[in-house]
Length: 502
Image (tube, rainbow, N blue to C red; front, side, top):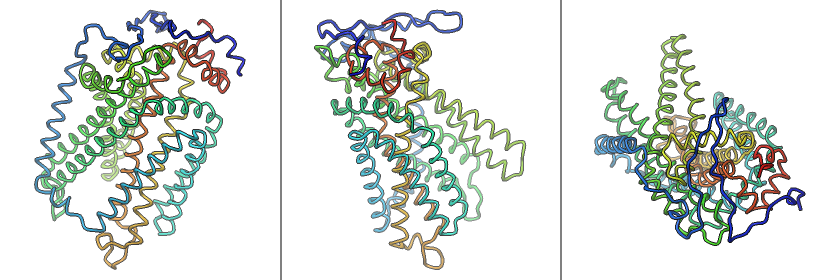
């Protein structure tokens, strides 16, 4: 038994520990910021446990903005694809087999990995890192053996970066494994989390298909003609930017609704799993709150990220154009904009994820929740702990591994079956445009499926951290064994959580 358990208070189910409703100090002047939320109460109903007095539609103008973007996107989908849907759907037998094979590979690897993740979290981290090194190395060897120098160099660099990354994070694996096991245990005891994952994967897959169709329809309608000239440059550029923005925005909203739904499940577990009554409908109730009263707040935060994403991608395209035109000043300028936008996106996304957990549980507006989340993390000193946790990195690496698997399967299929549509003028399949695009699309599909499916784990970890920052005494009282294990794996956490005052 850990020596840290000696000071842990007992837990009385009839009298749950008091939840922190104190003001949070922010700023150098020590000014107060009131989070102003009610403590969760034991109940069978989520709405009763996380009661919102006189609920109102938060940030509703941004919900209207999202609806307008969605209607325009659907209209563009119908307008640009009504002549090409039949052409896209007219696949031959080899293409159908390849699609089924890539789909099966992506789903099997994703959910097979979740099984491994649930049973052996430490092995998940280690094997995931090593397999990414192996996959990148195999792709590098394959590209170099086919005389594709640039692809070989790219994958070789990726393999080297993976090796250096693994060597630098090995010491953090014990803590991350412990926390990941805690998050997975909650998911095991709440099967609704996996149902949410499956539903999110399905909806996101349908939207991704719609996005591909819009892009294809835009290329056919206003893209290059037989002479290599744009049919309508103004419409092509304007539509392209809108599709880029709308694709980011809608995908971001879908992902954040999923995140907020999962946050309801993990918030209920954190506060009430040891109480005499715990919400039985946390997933459905949190989803209902996310798509009604809190939907505007989700659209608000998603809009900020999407605008930054669009700016970053447009700057990247403009950078390439400047390079082709020989404009060094333009290239440097757009490159700086791209880097700045990427940094801003990472910072805003980091804050948004924590804010959405508060939005889901307490029905706050976005700005109030974002400020509260930032104040909580900064005041509780959890930033270093979050940075030392590899859960998000591990899930990202695993998604990359699934992408490798799908890309590798598609490449093996093409070079083994030798379909006519992938052959060059000599009647053989080599590293040509059709093959490269097919492998890239297969890899993108694998990465997408894995990212959405494992997002419930990431959302659970984010919610766990923000609740730990807000009310660490609850976890200390209700999960003394797990809390002691965290202290044993990472003793400095005691100072970071400021538990001495509890």
